Structures are given as C-alpha cells and as structure tokens.
Image (cartoon, rainbow, N blue to C red; front, side, top):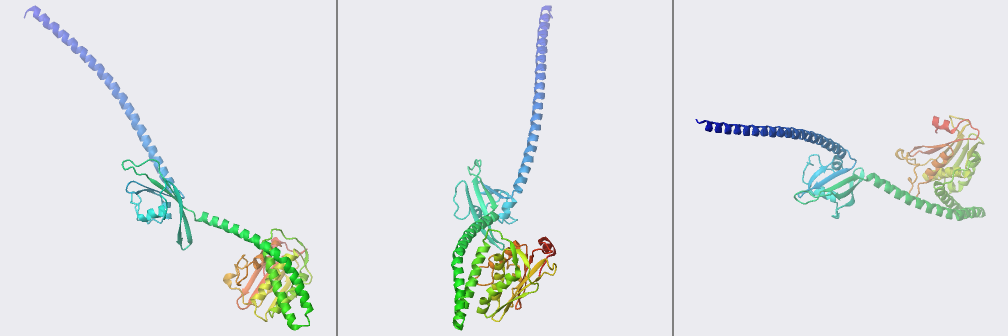
Length: 422
C-alpha cells in the first residue's frame, strides 16, 4: 500500500478515534449528570414518600380521633347525601335517639322513608337550615327530641347533590325545666292573687266572727236560733282557718318569737273550737299533764298549727267523736321538750298516703286546698320543732308536735340527733 494512502488511513483512524474518545467522554459526563439527577430525584422521592407516609399517618390519627369524638358526642349526628339519599354517617347516640334497630346497616344504607320522616318531621319545610322538635310517648312519659338540620358546604362530585347533616338531641330535661319555670311563674302569680284575696277577705271575716259571737250570746235563751248562730260561727271559723292557711303558706316574713304559755294557748284554742265541735255533734277535750310551761314561739302561727290539726280531726270523725289535745313532756327530755298531741277518732289515713300528707296541695278531702298540714310542718320547723303522724284506718290519727321550751334542758340539735318522736 502506498505510503500516502496508508498515512491518510491512519490520519482518518486517529481522527475517528479522537471523535469516539470525545463522544465517550461526553457520554460519560452525561451519564454522571444523569446519575446525579437520579440520585437527587431518588432523594426527593424518598422525602416525598416519607412526607406522604407521615401525612397518611396523621390523617389516620385525625380520622380515628374525629371518629372517637363523633362516637362519643352527647348528641346524635346523621349525614345523608348522594342522589340515592344514602346514610353517610350515623353515630350511636343518633341510633339510640331515633330508635334505629341494631341490624340496620348505617354505612351507605339507603335512608328509609321512616328514618327520613323522623328526621324531617311532619310538615317540615325544605329550607337549607331549620330546627324542629317532636314528641315520643313511652312508659316513662313523654320524651322530647330536638332536631337541627343544615346543608354541608359543597356538592357531591358527579351528581351535584348536597349532603345534609342532622343534629339530634334529647331535650326532655330542658323541656321539663322550662315547663317547671312556667308552672312556677303561674304558681307565683296565683299565690299573689290568693294572698291578695285572703287579705281582702280576712278583715270583713274578722268582723263577721265578732258579730256572730255577739249574736250567739244574744240568742242564748232561744235554742233554735242559738243552734243556727252556732252553725254560722263554726262555718266562719273554718273559713277563717282556710284564709289564714293561704296567708301563712305564702308568708315571707319570719316568725316573731316571744314567751308563750302553751297551757293557756291550747286552752283558749279548745274554747275557740267549741262551736265547731258542737255544730258537728262532737267533743274537744284538752288534757294538761305538765301545768304551765313557756316556749319561745310566735303565738299566732302556733295557734294556726293546732287550729289546722283540730279542724282536720273534726272533718275525719263522725258525729259523737272526740278530739283530744294533750300537753306533756317528751319522754327523752322531760323538762326540756314539750310534746303536744292532737288525736282524733276518725277514719284514719291509709299507710301509703302518710308520707305525702305534709305536701302542699295534697289532700284527701274534696274541695280542700291541701295547705293545712303543709303550713303546720313549715311553722313547727320554723320553731325548731318536729311534727309526726301515727294513724291506723278505722282507729284514728294522732299528730305529735315536739317543741323546745324556755329554759329547757334539750336543744333543737339534741332533739334532731335523738329523733324525738311520739
């Protein structure tokens, strides 16, 4: 091969090899850059995966937390959405309040007409947000359910429907308290009216009692007229006791204590009630076993106590019965506690009713306001005393009042500690 040709071939090969070497170097450089980019992307991907895992864990934690909150909310929560109106969410409280059976599937279950009817309520309007209430009757009485409905923000993808959320609450206690407040308000208004009327009646009633007493004395020699006057006098005194009960029950002022001779107070009361006893063909007897004894008391209020007990006793007895009022020492503290008993020979009080007889408004006598014994209990307790009852049907009833006396040996605290009773 000629030298010129060989030289040209060698030159071409050298040039080709140099080009190849340059290309290889460029390729190696590109590979190095690519490898570096891959490492960078791998690092970013690993970081993204780590962040995603962390985010998923955080989401799962929040989802579990919110699920726990939802499951333990004191109110019911129901979410219904989608074109098929399926139940998306229903917590246990909603299931309980709406009385949903356990076998009903709450996850994606179709909202049955009965459930929708309960949630929407009869005649409920289709506004975005509304509040309503409905009542359920059961063995324990009425239960009131309050429902608040609202639209969730945004629409479901694809069907354009809006999810709705219902908040379901048992508002029975709130309703009860509201009804009690209203009843108390009405009761307060009636009490004011009753007190006003009682005040208006008491003054002319006192005059009528005075004139009736004078009339009874004036016709003492005329048996028939005297009998009618006695009936009138008894009726007025019974009415006076009722009026005083109303005033005492609603009285706001405290008792005005002063030394009171119990022997004299009870003796005067027995004499005052003689016309009532005679009018009913009955007797009243006062028995004093301790003589004169003083108590720190409000005489007028204490009179009202024994007047109420006596009138109740007269009403419980048939003609010929005797009402006995006894004054003696309480067995636990002779000389320290006075015990007054008012005993009748009437029909007695059924055992199941004896715990309620001191409740205001409770009565077994038709037409009676049921305030007498409630007033008795309140006044006796204002004096630091105690009132109890013992009764047997067809044998009669005995009310026992225990009161501290002036300079006595027992204190009210000691009396309560020993449970001094009849």
